[in-house]
Amino acid sequence: MSQPPKPRGLGRGLSALLGDDEVASAVTPTAPAPPAAVPTASSSAPTVSAPAASADGGEPARAAANRTPITLPIGQLKPGKMQPRTSFEGIEALVESVKEYGLLQPILVRPLRDAADSYEIIAGERRWRAAQKAQLHDVPVVIRTIDDLDALQIGLVENLQRSDLTAIDEAQGYKRLIDEYKHTQEDIARMMGRSRPHVANTIRLLDLPPAVQEMVRDGQLTAGLGRALIGVPDPLAMAKQAVAEKLSVRDLERLAGDTKKKAKGLAGGGAGKGKPGAAGGSPKTADTRALEKRLEEALGLKVDLTLRGLGEQSVLTLEIRDFDQLDTVVDKLTRR
Image (cartoon, rainbow, N blue to C red; front, top):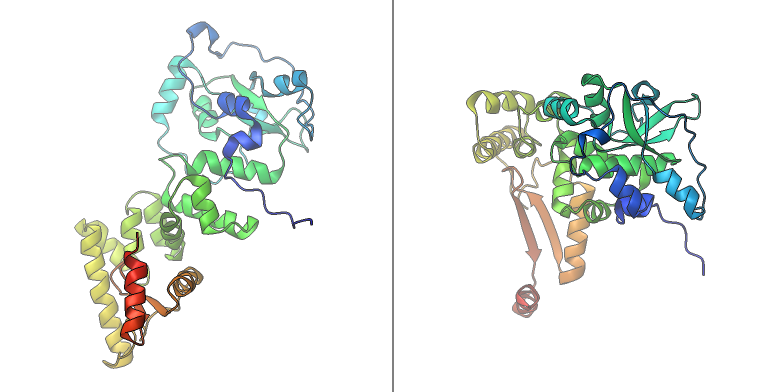
């Protein structure tokens, strides 16, 4: 019985998309090469044509040629439209390294359909920008014929696994995988080697106002401080206060919690009986409802999961009708 096609995932990483040899040559940092092997500004670029892609991988000679690094004039390379990174600041150290040793790691590119002798960067835009600042005329590249989906996934794999990618860019990359390619948070966590809570908490940063997101992007606020601001009445004002007073995440969580409680008291006239966090609280996200459903299926109980109003702290409520059911729950929770 035929199964409906599933979106291609990142779980197998670049090795599945490109082949192990190409990954090694195109996107894995290499040890410094001898000076004679480094491309210089005076080196001449050979005339090359991108080998045609083959559905079954092609014959060995063609495949080998397709993954062999060559040099191209730097002006023939264009920024990738699938690039998740929005900031390329802080590459001065990379520029100095390129000036001294040349570009040791090839840039992965694909031919542009609407421009002759032009190539779109799939992986390595930071290196390309550093090479420009280092005034190199030619750079080593690996040319591949890659469709848009694989181009996006390769760019995300390379960039999302870099430690210097901002939390906002990371969140937008995850969101794009969810919206455009129907990946779940569990899929992304497995693909990127992250925990599912990390993915969920990173995506939550996109609930912040654009001005606060920009403060996280440029490093004024950490991702933890940003998450503590989610759901407060005036996150921008509190963000500025956190920066001015150099508040820790715990300090900001306490301040945010007090602010939320005051806002709820004014809105509800002091009323607030019932489930914790229910009165005046924000609507539950799809992720929270999904967690409640998983817990209900595992425990066989009615479950309520609500934010407590202190950053990411939450209250989990289980409705238990008698001691027999309580014993069952205790047994499930303590079973090893």
